[in-house]
Amino acid sequence: MTIPVREHFATTTRGLNRQSVPMKLFEKAKKYGIWNPSDIDFSKDKADWQALGKDEQDILLRLTAQFQAGEEAVTLDLLPLIMTIAQEGRIEEEMFLTTFLWEEAKHTDFFNRFFVEVTGTTGDLSHYHLDNYKSVFHQALPNALNRLRVDQSPEAQVIASVTYNMIVEGVLAETGYHAYYTVLRDNNLMPGTTHGIDKLKQDESRHIAYGIYLISRLVAENPDLWDVAEETMNTLLMPAVGVVTESFDCYDPIPFGLSVDDFTNYAMMQFQKRFARIEQSRGASLDIVDQLTHDAIDADDA
Ligand code: MN3
Ligand code: FE
Image 1 (cartoon, rainbow, N blue to C red):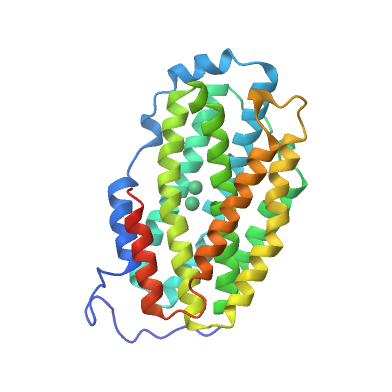
Image 2: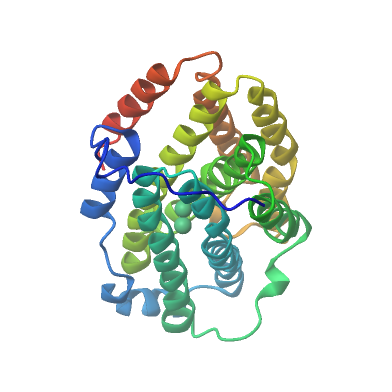
């Protein structure tokens, strides 16, 4: 690997591009990403937890064990992408990415508080991670991101961002929020946890917006990479939907009246939404990519 030579600083030559997509996301992160998981009051959540039935507790533990490890994974695995962007001298993108990593660490912190303070669980929860979950979080995600340590090509970046931002965040995390909302908010349970999920989802929407921007930028710069993006999406669809079905297969009847079809449909809908969004960049110029991303971020009120 060749060590890049620094020729100039962006801030003292061209200046920071404050109108750029990543700076807009950085501004939003400074405004909305400053919530503190330690401030959340879990007292009613704890009482609600104790009143749940055994299977109800079990499915919530399963969902949270998936989220907790998922947040740890995205915290650990993001660094090679940040390093890649930094080495390309993309200061605006890296400024945003500092908030991204900090937020993933806070999400890891949040779910740990839920386990310890709401459920009193401290033991090994890895039995909640089944085959499809492992194929995403033990293999696809770390493999795609760690490849960037040795190969920072645009192709490797597309695979990393599709895996991380489109599948793990855009499909799996979004479907997980839908589960928390269906179980907790719709039953008026655990207001502290529900509030934390609101905040997480807001943070996640900025992360996904950045991923869409990155993939769109890479495809605009290298049109052949559309096929790589599409193939990566399609390869990961089965394990992503499998995470949903393998979780529900553990229950009969499924607690809280949940329906496996509702959640597989939701996951598919998220997948199609992400796919359609990145497909807009196919054949588009960088200017169009910028405009589309600005419009999408403006339409999202937080
Ligand atoms: Mn997160
Ligand atoms: Fe995220």
